[in-house]
Length: 338
Length: 299
Image 1 (cartoon, rainbow over the protein chains, first blue to last red):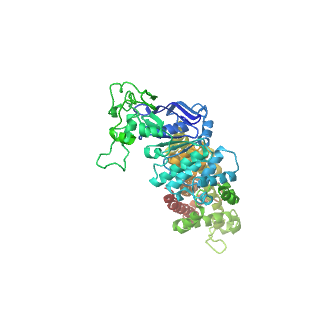
Image 2: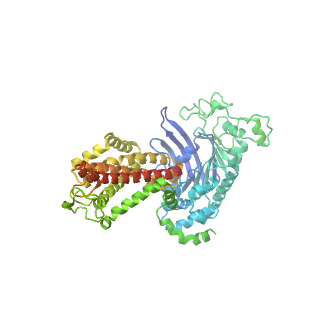
Image 3: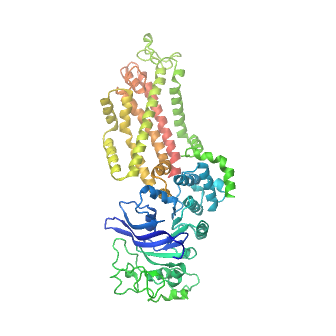
């Protein structure tokens, strides 16, 4: 945390859904912060609570039945304490969000111009013509060809990548301070992924918009994020600057993620490395460290105590493992780290 | 560049002020014309509504002018469809009857559409207890045979066209409410609704601008078919003497009057019966055609 004051402080965020077999702890005490203009990546397997974290920040979790507790302090205001009116103003106005599936996230019966204008007018009192002008320049900004014509087109005329650009334009329409991107590239093919990541990068740099980029693809984050949070079973298990996470991770789960990346420059005789077992159920969580049933380094203390996300003696960044810094990473990873 | 592009386009900005284009209107009309069923239905309805509107201009006689010496006249150049039991011109009565039958059916159609849309949207949107209560009311209304219930309500209010319309509206809005609720529930879960919420749009705006336009097509189809059914029900209830009172011309009431002379002058029942059948056919053909056109494009 070297850059500026924090824009967003998440403290002990817990999001619990009721279910037939007991409370489902999708997010279980996550804490992190995002500085103004910072690019933060959140990685983790499916079901690790990444998306629910994003939705909880946005206030898009229906409560009740679910419950969201902890603190979500945005610009000094705890969003979990303010009324729904103010929440709505923040949403879209100061925090923008883009979703995984751009094909379904635009209303098929409205022109994209209408949809952008509508968003602007929901947050600002300006003449329609002005909002429309801004919509056109936003489309231009995100790289939609011929924006003054495209603004009157319906979503079905755009490809997936173009629709994601439109989504980004909508999310940016009120100059938010924070953009949450929930797997924005997952539904797109690789070349388009790169373009979208580049676009987000340039927006972040030019407008000083902080971006929280949620993905399960470590490779994408490598070129984008300044800081990476690794999420497992509803908690942050390791966090640090991107290079630290990639080259000096100390949590066995992060190692598992890193070693399961396929590499072109490796011999193909080795079997693809995987993390054995499944992510724990959010209802029946293992005692102690949630990763211990799958961890090959687990010892007697692991099922007993939940490791805190702290900087250990032998370590240089926060890692929620009892033995952070003391374990030797797997051989395959050591090659990369050297 | 952006500013330039924007400013050259500025004169067109007023286009955004126009109401949302729910459907591609031009192509809808063109498709309607290409679809033979729908076209026949449309022509029937246009001609019938046109004649109903123009009745005072087109009708050769006053519909209530009795020419007692000239009763049960066969069709002639003067009386195109002959005269009835009081010597009134049958054709003129049919035309003026169309005004009441068609427009009353349409009025009830619009009223129940409005009630059904509002109730269905509230129910689908709110969910929980509100949804439960509203849908149970619908269940209760659907548990009775609708015609019988409309008959009972009108009977309690007292005969008369307005009371009849009220009775019908109370009974028949349920179909729309059910349909709307189901559609709202499906559309509500689609990702662009969540996306709209994430953009901070108010709930009411989301309901009006994002949900309603996405479910309007099935409602149009149901509305057209329903209006045909309403016309039949209206005629049936008038036939039973609950609606329009004599001497006012109305198709169902004309049928009812003609019934007394079925043996001697069956044409007095034939003409209004045919008119009702053809109008209902028109609504049904148009509805079927609309369904063919609208459904595959949206689903």
